[in-house]
Image (cartoon, rainbow over all chains, first blue to last red):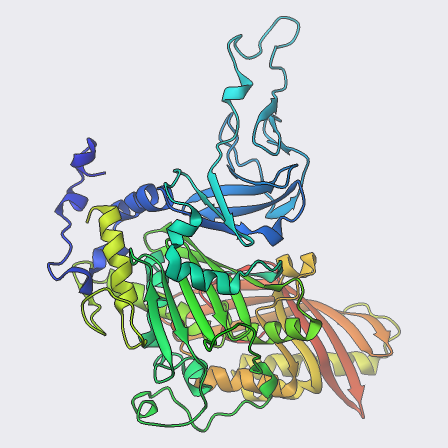
Length: 418
Length: 162
Ligand SMILES: [Fe+2]
């Protein structure tokens, strides 16, 4: 950490200067510097922020648990006897062993396999084998207090079936954290109906985690890179759209309304638009309207580790798990509603072909991470230009803007002291 | 072809030829030939062991018709951006497990190796194939192919079918 924190001066971080132009420029070193990454872990992923953990639907009954990763830390979310969810660090209070090695399951208690220290669903230490020794020999010291050796617990918040947690208690409720604008979009998808998990996808991308937040705050690329989306009118900037943010700029929602496969003055600037392409089996894209209002796509980016995808009837949580400065994992949890009729589940599954590591649309983004990181890493002193739609941070009634990326970095700089 | 149930030598040769021809088409990158190995209505799915064992229906790629397979090929030719790479498939241990009214059930193991341009070859994915093959007027076609990958985690992206 920097000298200001009282630690050993770190030449790298002290010398770092954000470009004078502000958020319309992003310096390449924030995507490569291990010291920046360490500070992000400390201030963002272990700071007072509500991080996405899992869905309630993954752990419906007492004793059900699922593992999750928040930044570089691993946690276990478990439902207690009273129905409440606890988020525990997956590290035994004895020798820090990862005590839970299944992705999900159901237990009555957690037993660390190394020395069989046993914890209840609240993370309280229940038993230590040979705590009092054997025949007067060995054992833990007389002043050993099991109540001081429970599992580390995180602060937990949940809203409408989505579980969030924080290593440092935020001074905002999850509702205050999201702010009224984003909460409105969040509640549109999570309207209180019970959810149903359709399955998981995971991919490892050779890029800095922030590139994925930016990618999902960047509607400009969607109309150019994604031939599939553009051609079939699923997201195009000449369609009715909007870019909205909370007051801090850390969260955003990109909103779009489906159009037709017709050429016009805008498609003339999109090399991606292919008037000639037709699906041989149109069942792939057979969306039905399921939410009030006109929007057919809402992509929410929540600070710091979640993208909520609603593209037609394709719903997914995309959890961003940073590994180091140059790599992150993306964990996709596709879902629908418990009350969906079978044909709606079929439709969601068909549309899932657009997303994930093999998605008609998402492959483009995965490859963009690879190629962006490669270009950035080759020139750490370079900078990226983010001034489509101006240099300010403000919601806009269109998507021909990079304002949500600027909003993200305005907040990022404040948190990171950069 | 390994031990089977009541299969004639001729049928075994025909099955071996089908797998070899499929492998040849994909091995040469001639993806346009790929849908022709399937029946008009079919099930093609790539999923992970994690989803498969949990009974979760989501896959990585899924299609219900030869036309949807053709759409997959059209997308990888015309709409998808990806860094240049080659994918090599090795399929082995093909076993005819049962001959049933709705087709022959076979299983096999697969390994995929990926070579990104200017990079060394690396193991990309491996797993099991669960196939159903029908004999229509002397021609064998896949009517179902479920590819179950051992890893859920995909390095970067899965562009080509298995
Ligand atoms: Fe994209």
